[in-house]
Amino acid sequence: MSNIQSVTYQNLGWESAADIYLPPDFNQATKYPAIVSTHPIGSCKDQTSGNVYAAALAKAGFVVLAFDASFQGASGGTPRFIEDPSIRVSDIRFAIDYLVTLPYVDPDRIGAIGVCGGGAYTIHAAMTDHRIKALASITGVNFGRLIREAFSQFDPVGAMQAMGKQRTAEAQGAARHVIDYLPPSVEEAKQAGLTDIDVLEATDYYKTPRGQQPNGATSGLFSFNSAAMGWDAFLHAEVLLTQPLMVVIGDKPGGFGAYRDGWEIYGRAASQNKQIFVAEGWSHYDLYDQPEPVALALAQVVPFFREHL
Image (tube, rainbow, N blue to C red; front, side):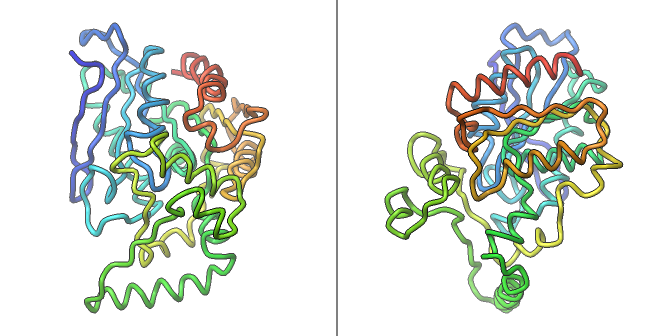
């Protein structure tokens, strides 16, 4: 039996595509703890959530499911490239629904991990689905905050007005306006005067062979991005987020805001057992795939899940 199984399962009105990463000595007669791994915004299951974190956690003895978001990657749903936080969180619940049907998964030992936007979606999912017994956020970013700030040029009301006009045009037959969140190359980003570490390093990850995957589109449907404007990943964390929480961030802050978001949720979470680990000397995108900072993160995350699952 291969250690990676590709599966599909029912979501709302479409199917989700996922890869299940199995431990090296997998035995179908054993009940395993399982973890749902959620990818960043504009990413896919074949990138950091799958080939880095899911693979490593499976080697450590967990069954790990890395899925593609609805409307993205190999998952179904139209129109394509919707980034709706409520649906991204719902995707995690459907992933758990699938895991609990597997005979080799212990339904009482389910955890969740996410990277970048997926980290904050994981936090929000854990607040409203306590089947998640422990969770880890790797350089998590609150997409609601990000779209109200940098992604809207700090003019969220103006951005929403533009999104409304575009959605009306599309409803009346205009072509969908899909934006690329990133420049085509690091060189073009620099030529355009972009200097932020997160923008440059994201481009290096997503637009080069380092991290590039066919489904890692870094794209969003502009007219539907208004769904994120009123959303906050951390809303009610002081009351509802009670499970053990591990937050991992780098200490090189960038424009996407993982450093501040990490400290914010660490402070706000009601969890009695909460930890924050700062990878000194490393950035947001280093924690996606660079061996040394990833090893630092896993040295925290693996014992954390072993203890709490």
